[in-house]
Image: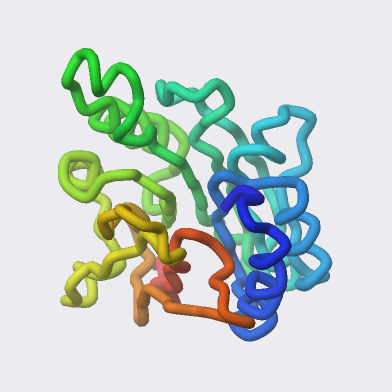
Length: 235
């Protein structure tokens, strides 16, 4: 998300939130400006408040405090090359006492120096590490959502599927849709990099990549991915 062209983007983001009113929102490349706008626009929304600067400058999970209570949270090192990038996660409880885990990550961009000089896909290791950490964190039969900018559409997704995750599009028999860019950036090829994954007793009922504009601008250079999930009954 960041603050690139913020003067032109902040109103589209505000309008997007007003119209869609998400109950759970996972953000990568977070900025203090975007964080304030989200909580000001949706006063019932909460986020992790922690002195570790990554929660303010890299990623965070926002949730509807009328529906969920925060149980615990963490930021796990999964080997991303940027200093403060992490696997950010929260455990949320619903009124019945049942819990779910929501996690987000921003896997390393393809233009990183290791990929150029060593010709390796660093996101494979990041996906493996994310799956291992979520295996450790998530309780048996507890639903988990893992959403983020994975900067890839092949090998990291394959690794996560091997770990039992499914993506919102394939789970509904839909073809995944290009998510980047939303800005008319010259010489920028379209990419499918943003994903919503799930595992356990939870399933998507609707999912879409949204071409949203207000006053001629989108809220971000990535298109929002919106998914409605249903928690399955656990006997």
